[in-house]
Image (tube, rainbow, N blue to C red; front, side):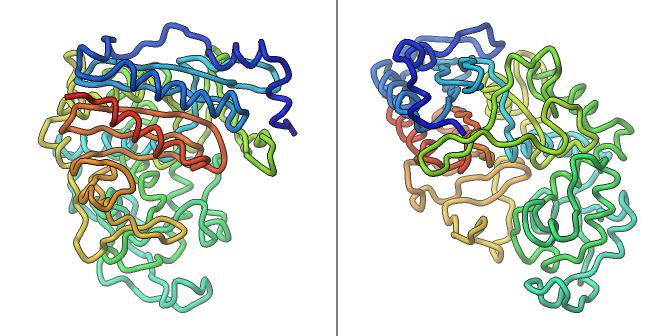
Length: 419
């Protein structure tokens, strides 16, 4: 256990950590804030505010970046990648981004749809035959209840929108059936998913789920490539995202950020997963399995803001990108909610991203049409087509919403706009 007080063992060491270690990180071209109508003074306030939480020992460390109109105006690291070994945070530190994997995986699906190799209306069973035999719980609260055949089968669109009736890898249903293991392959996982009854009729309930991981298996089947190989060839390499993938390779170990839990006034290091993030896992989880950096993820968001292109490399058409970042949910499933079930009346869902549909319902300033998503270990991202602003904050901390830092970061970034 690492006591918060031990983080401040020496003033000199703490100051060194709060400054972070600046290293070369391939990213967007940089500009002074005023060149893109942002305030240097307000960005300095944002920076000092975030660093206060590190200097106070509340969080181990972070990397944050802000871009506007394709120009990077802020990239800072502070704190520790590894407290025990006193490794300072770097700008190119690698984080487990968990659910921020979903938009990247969904882009791969949209590429195949755009090429006519896959259709939104296709039944999942066309690619994974066992999905034709799925049942629906009569009472989804009772894992032993009777079941019935669904009124219709799950489609590709259902999976993209999380309305197929599947559950989440961390929910009791899938945990009790041991559905998800990083030691399984995608092929093994989808067969386990197909063997568990649905919690709702397809198309009738938005339930944040394992759907995007199932889509990864469909990408493999349709493309004939392993999912990670497909992403590398068609998404990550074209967008020049060298530090994004499904594990931290040996040559990247110096970039690895450790995970800490805030518990009773202490930062406690979380144990490794059964298949550590430093090991190439059999399971390539499109829903939650990727690692990335702030510079890499800002490049991904900028490609989406550019309508599917970055630095002359096009990964998707503007029309298909627009589908990804436009709410596609049936009105009957709104408002959506996570667990615990708190309605998010400001948000809808596109083909891979959350989308703001009513900014007046948000707890902070948001424009309708803003898109993005977060990760369960403290990573946070958004992009706003109206202002041309994109931003990423990455931490590795539990609970992920500690000190409401993501909302604070967002509010201060918004206030830095001066036009």
